Image (cartoon, protein in one colour):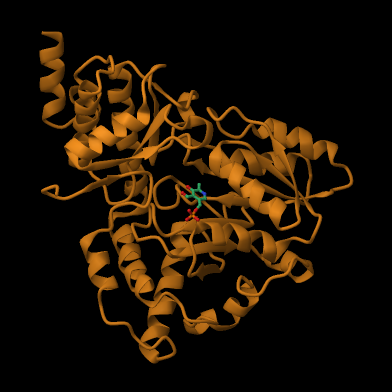
Length: 397
Ligand SMILES: Cc1ncc(COP(=O)(O)O)c(C=O)c1O
């Protein structure tokens, strides 16, 4: 039995704000009635600015993995080649999913510590004179490593090669947290999920689609039924769905979209970037490395922290859970027990961040992991406000 509230600081699912929870708790309504039509239209319109698109956004009652699959089965045919880039665990999973669907992914090797190398993509597409590669699939924010890739640079690489491949981008841990522009960056399919920057529980996922992607779907021959965009697009304009939608999650989504619009996306992105910078200041002060080793590629939504050799990240997380009632993300795949991940996305503020930093430092001490104490002061120096200069003065004077 733990007192006080639990601190869910994994990189998604994130904390759901009370107004969103309240909307989800409302009575379920008739999903073919007039009230639902308005809800559907509000949500479908409200999603567009978040994706940075004027085009349609498809909403599935599914986790993000469903939206990965939907992006591929709507646009591609058996045996099609797709170019993917190994940013980390989630890029690897999307590649495995593509293989299981009967596609032929080419996986450009990465180091799990940096983002997509657009020049290597350009070089590979340049070589593909016969245009056998049908899509380039990129994870914008690799949740296993805390590395964000430059999507505009990938678009430029595709254009420089004069290659017609579709560009598909997974924004599951970046949408609503890190600047993202479906239309401006010429993305054909954007994949997203409800449980991170959108501040909802898991259960909804999304495909934003370009006119080119919709055109490609006409000739695509992978089998599709549940995921078919056209069934959705036929009834979405009236606010309806071809099968029973996740009614109450959509009620929550309407409120979450209103909250993002009220704060303003620019401010939302700046808040995330600021929290990420303060987190990194604490990590460096402790004397640890982040998993991301390219300064400009650090994610705004999470930070993956490497522990020194011989220390268990899982034991540290268990100690923090027991003593501070706080969940942190585990290391995935080869990073298991080496890395822990701090989620600083969604419904999050400076005070929560200071709680995270203090709790991690408490765990480091409890586990006997050598570190320089004072992470909270280091974070405060970045957060600024009243504490910033005072701390600076104390540190120097
Ligand atoms: C970047 C990324 N892609 C895909 C997924 C898979 O989404 P889901 O677990 O909702 O199916 C996740 C989950 O965390 C993710 O972070």
